[in-house]
Length: 373
Image (cartoon, rainbow, N blue to C red; front, side, top):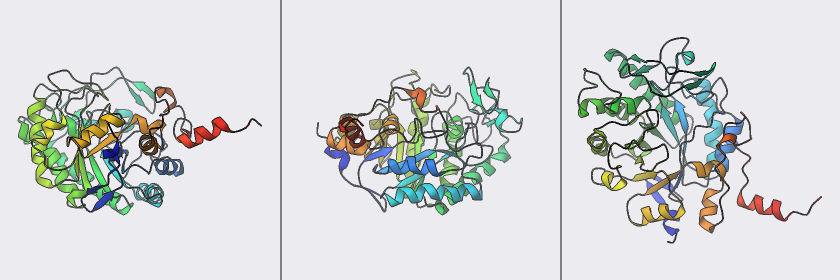
């Protein structure tokens, strides 16, 4: 099938995206112990600025939200200022970039929090072997269940992070409500055993996400806000028997906001929980009228097909963007992709290796034809 559908412009509210190819959020751990955006991150994002839209790596909204070594934050003045390196680098290349707002919830460890337990909707341990922490591999802990009166403070952290993202020059924000992190933990019956207004029913489990969206859209126009969901995912020990009811309800309620897009992990990127038939973009199209962004196991042709057939307006690519900074050009010209199979190099160093040293196709061709010295 022709890939032309990928290269048509798209009007995301008042933003014009040059194509339908989105760089998915990719946690790359290059921000150092202080979690500060830096020059090499600016280079990395600028290399990939031909994407119609870049969604930044997951970025924590507070100290409490942390739980991944050397991931960036957006909760101090210095972090806000340093993000301007990235946004200006992308804009200089004609790109667009949203910041993904993140709270890890139970997928964290006390060593990130001066000995205090990570927080979650309920005291339900993440059933995986270990987590990488500042002191090495550690077993996951039983998190502390949030008190009801603590939750508005976290909602406010999202609102303040949205303000800082605006001040830092981002074009919009994406709310990370997927992959077993805090908002997803509230949504799913597997991890939410609360008996207050934030648990016990599909409607109550959605309440926290609704309050976060309300807060963030008080800062940004709704068309500059996206939400990411993972209805089929097993990553971070997720998957609930009532996933269809929960995510259908959530998408229908989000439809009221006129969001820029709903970002759905509809493939097998992080594994499928196997509790029933996977939810598809068609399921979400029935209850969500706005733009849909598909994500997971797409290649050029399947992405073009999804757009041409009206199942999605945008398709996000992750691993392919890691190893192909010029992914858009490779897709456009039918050029072969760099190999993305060697994940060991992605986090091999805190520098360029496995990060900014992947060659473009033209660079590869030049190196292959250069005369020996």
